[in-house]
Length: 175
Image (cartoon, rainbow, N blue to C red; front, side):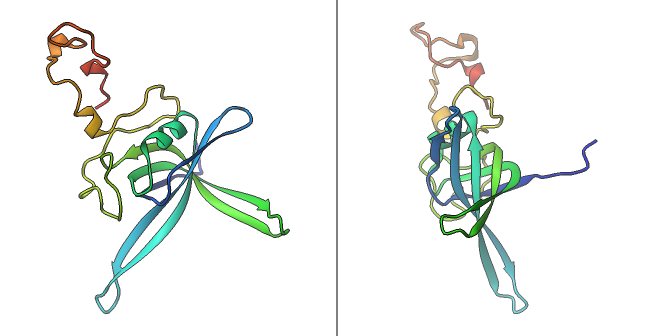
């Protein structure tokens, strides 16, 4: 039985576009920034707000998905673990950075939405998840999935009215 737990879960807006790189061993890695906001009322009843800025690192197929679907201002959920890296800077000073190594990501707004906090219109609608680093298919947003051919009925899955095969069967849509 595990006695320790290292888990981080955040919902926020990207502060910059993901930066996708490939390691020397050929592994994909993306780095991105996420801002989260906290609001509270002080003793005088005035609303106070504080922003926290998080560095997020994503590996493998999930890094490619983040690079494809995320951009500055997009709202997303990240789940993973905290990791602190230490290094020595060129000027000889010791540096330290704590990052969230994400293992799961969920898009929380439609493509093109973004901007300031709360841009998802309440956040009650969640777009498809990019859970699992081993995923092999890219994850469409709700807006893209809603544009799927409407003329195919469940009994005609995989075909259109003119019997030409479609790219995606209705049963293959992940939500």
